[in-house]
Length: 557
Image (cartoon, rainbow, N blue to C red):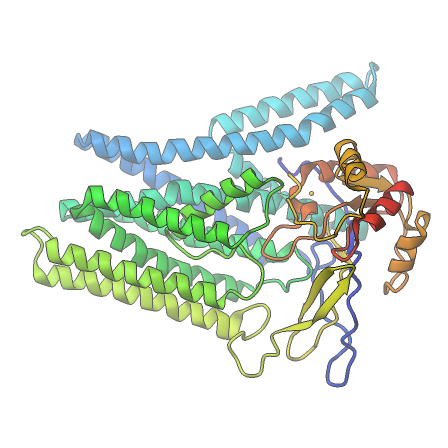
């Protein structure tokens, strides 16, 4: 129950008000699909979660079954390695999951206990709290934390389907929070467990020149788990943002096939090379990881709050880049993706050619040619599905098609040396008007570069103020600030109720919104929701707002 922050329908907006696209040939509005006001929870969504549970169980069960088989056969070295790649990553993910539960549930349980007092109501509540803590502890010790999250997501989805309009938005937001937590945990586990397990089992099969049924089953489950989680992560991330169109299940399956075949070719090439050159394979992996990590750092990603957290995040993404492409930077990615897959193709060819040249005498030429063709065909199929995804099934439209308008650069706005580029992705049939008012609710606030120049003589004052003020602030209504009222007067609808002001610009895709990943803000939303008759709003600071304007706003809070 990591998504214990039950944020209801919460309006979110940016101070940036982009100019209208209401020009000849451009329709005025763009279809928006937000988490709370999007399509209802369907049977297909439920089946997707059930399939995710099946993938999770099949991956873990086949690995444990294979480890037991190695032990019974007397292959204690392979038994130990297989078991290590199951237990250690799972324990890491369970610790992180339980930490999220403690952070989400501890304050709420303390608040419930304080509110209930010492009467007859307090004892049952305290008993429920203790039972919940014991239940979650046992679940995570048994390595079943993610299973509970999947079951909880099914429950929230069903409630968002069956409840009335108000509770439906409430459960829809809780479902989105839970889905975000699950995908982050499972993606981490996939590249800590499934990816090295896949390479290990392929290496054992090639080294022994024999394929056991359990080995093939375990390798297949690991490969499916990797491809599934990459595609699922992208779907949930897009569903969480209203400035991006959601992915259809056709697009998700196509993206899964793309990663299935490219990762398959990659891992087979790794296993071939590792079966002959164990030492050089380790050197190659470390070198590739260092190069990719440096490339990611050089691209100046902006996901985390501090510089060192950002570097650690880039190092983790460098591990993902050993196996597949993973977009971590805003803007067009065609050039970066082309460079990555060109390097990957060269590496696959070099690794496979080295194995073919120095393979053992027990490997026949016909068998070697079949393996080489398998690597080549798998990579070609992965590239084919990647082109299918981008040409026909991309949520923004056929990116490589001639009829696609693409992402329209609306212009560059300059205010006191601050430049902001506003992009609007439009569909060929419906056009666009970038509406930054969305309905959505926050783990750690990401670090964002502040392009606003401080007013001369106020640098020390800003430093003192930043050291004592929280990152986000709450105020009763937007009318308390005349400047803010002027900026939001052009909004298409009147928004009332309490406002949570986040003194950070809104992150751009492919980053998660701060109101999805900051657990403190989730709790704030929950408290405001229960204490206010109107759903609260989240408002990001405009990237065009200078520090003097921010200071003037903060003095009015």
